Length: 249
Image (spheres, one colour):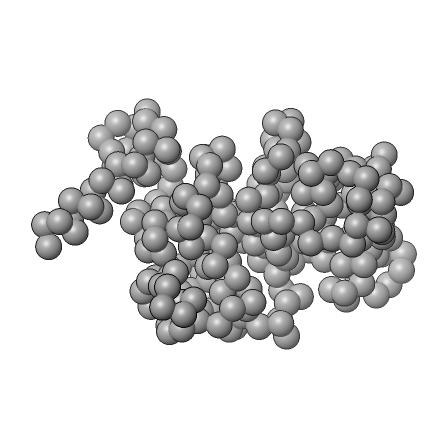
């Protein structure tokens, strides 16, 4: 079995004349939480859409679990978009159950048990019969996560997953993510803040569609010469370092 969950070679993508992803190559091991960290407009969401098959590359190759991303192998992945994509007139339970059916959980008893388990995990049991339109933004985020993981996919993409969540719920999510990676699941997390990034096994710093650094949080901090620096300061360090190299050329 290939030890990499994702392998990217020379990936490029443009919206017309606007180059969003530029000659990006990356390998992501199985069973890890891997963070894509960068400011708004750095290409994080576009990269995720390329990895799940919503967009087609302008150039380069992508392999996810040994296959090219497509809708035909959607069962292998879970996807939580940056903005919740839910049926607001349906209840919390009906939304998660709907996605469970789409992803092929056919046996009613097993599906109901899994849906109940996920609702409890995202801490919405008391709201399970509530229409999504009546939920807060943070609660909608939790429903969206439940929809993404209900079918137990081996590869999960989370785009800004903890935006609007209370700190205690965020901690609970990351505890669960750790149990998933320990079981061999690969989680890709996109974020423009360092709160989620600090929990990841490994990070890539993105800027203007290019990788400026890759490593564990500790490795990226240590590369600055100060192991106690913040990830935010480490990111700024690599921006300056990249600029110095480009100016020297």
